[in-house]
Length: 216
Image (cartoon, rainbow, N blue to C red):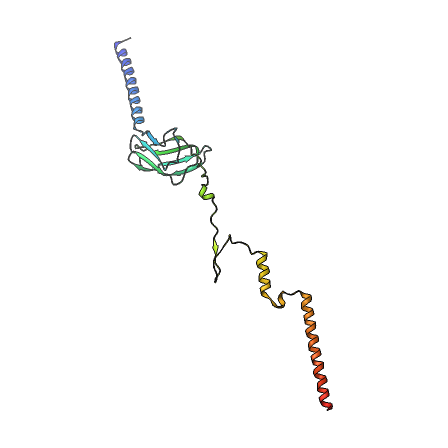
């Protein structure tokens, strides 16, 4: 083999090696250009005892202000919150208007990297909300309130605890009424018949006297 052939072969090997090195450097540079998530709130795997008011994603570089989409899903994959995140420096923030349901949840995000390439990921977390203790009624609350008084238009107030009218008072009122209203029905009828008889007798007596005067 000639010296020229050996030199050409070595040159080819060196060229292939250089191309490979340049390719690896280019791939590494392109990969390093993409933004990466370095922090989040809620954090990955966090267990919260109250519903968060926002989702905050922090990247190593400021992402683009377009194409940011964040959602929160429950254990069944149903969306419980979603919206377009706003960029604040290296953060992408999504404000949560309502309260998230308790259980296993997951943040799903997709943003535009500073180099224009979309990046995405998921952040699982758990929301544990303790049931509110049922307040027991206090002794003052169980004590019955005093009876309210009701006042007639032209008379003194009468409370709910006023004693009932006794039978004796009712009898006295009946006796005070007096007259025929307190007599039995049969006695009222007898008095009426006697009165009618008296009137009839008086009429007969007057008629006889008138007849006697005419004869004279």
